[in-house]
Length: 406
Image (cartoon, rainbow, N blue to C red):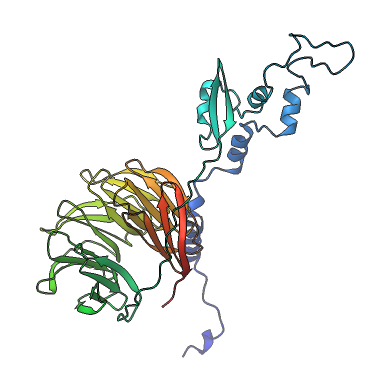
């Protein structure tokens, strides 16, 4: 029937080719389309005088070597009070070699990176001198951790875990669409909950009611009554897979986020969607909630972290320090800080404005899980490696690391 068309390529679709190129450009160059052009970048680089560029300094200054006094180094020069040792010349050298912007005065000198240089005032003059490296305290020795127990029972990847506030049992969700409840002391299986039709991506246990909340890739958010072991509520609204779930510590508010690029705030009792937090340009991978302001923190695959005002439903701060997808967040139980995990490293931040504290390097893989306890022991898990890090102020000590495996 189609013998005449055999071997003949299909007709070229010009509209389809144009659409294909547009999608390709957006996919490949979306993250760098707002960067300055080459001409603007060169102008910005030329607007700063670098102290070690010999051409500029040779044009602007004459080479001269002068001492602070005529020290007697030859015949005819006598050692007197006028020729005695005076001011150390190292101060004058630090002033001459300071980094200044063109057409700027000393009052604008504070714009230079405070983490590298310090502004020193001597008399009526100011100078920039390099900061001294911070001395770290010696870490306290801790005995090595050993594997205590391996719990098996799921038929797919375990995606989430939540411990009951009374430390009697814990719940896990996996790709086998099952939620399993285990005894924390013995590690034995107590209960299996079925109801999701796709992978379970998040579970959380309520500290005030006998409820367990779960979310999954089937776009469903469920509330389970643990007295009857069945679903009693559904929260509908997400347009795609739901990746993370959390509870407010003091009020009956439920928070979820997912692949549709939004985070949603739910009334736990009425099932009403109070706020839809929009602003991320990609999947929202994790969400955390606390009692103090800002109450909601989200991390997204668009490499940003947002801090939200729960009452207004608006973003307060957007953190752009990460260069790759942010996949995990955790809050310190005692300190007013939180940590975020990405494929590049783990970063520590301070509330309420999201001030950067430090980097926690070590991983060479994508980090999918992150948690910390009240003693400052941070556990991170990646696709290839896992780390246990103790944080003491700004001192970091890696006590255990290895390869992930069954």
